[in-house]
Length: 361
Image (cartoon, rainbow, N blue to C red; front, top):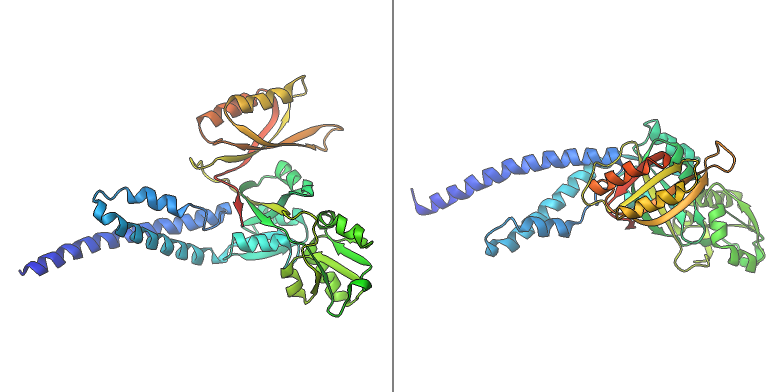
């Protein structure tokens, strides 16, 4: 046998091993896609550069390492392509109609999913509980206008888990039927949150206000009315979809207006060493100092409180539950110890989510 044939034989042998392990890898990727669909996790939920850096260290010969980095990058890209194809049938619920900010957020988080409009927050939430949708994308907070209390209540009273939080910049626009001029507009229509975000602008122009279920419904209402005396406050995407024109852009008074959306699914993510954020809900025993004790316990075990909010339980007058956002891996040993200690001063306690980071989309 010629020497070149021996060398080619070694390459063929290596390629056969690569092919076998490639099939094994793609089988695992298929399982990963199913897991992400069940848990409401987007395809891009990983740090590609960190993975490549870690795995490239497996190559002992430094002369080969840069080539292996290219090999890994291509393998990860093929993995993502396959996951995108497999998640094509995913159904993501949101509150409102097409063009709502929740719809925009859902499309950005799950570009391969079919986005399902629902009448309100509860309908979107229950569509996941009932198995009609794989996940729900719902707002939990706007940095200017505060919490979305109905969604926080759903998290407390419901059975779903939060597997990620995503922040989207909110740019509100004044939208009207084509041909409308500013001096014709007497009333603006939008969701209460949007009206609150644009309160100074509304007061400056002496507009009357009319509430809508959400911003996209307001846009649709104005479009279908054909009237020039009303305008909607909403997104550019909604204006384009329903054929309205922008009378003025960026009318919200805060230049850094953003809304945080939570992704709800039926099952929690598995314990993950990367998880550094968590959301927890609890009620405290009706004894002196219980709330203070609960807060102290969280700190004693090395967890940082980012947010602590109270909401009425609706069961008893002046009875409250508490919503907590914290930093730290609650799935680790310290987290388990902290939860065991909290149970001594909390009458109800549940962790509704943990994840690696909050993502801007």
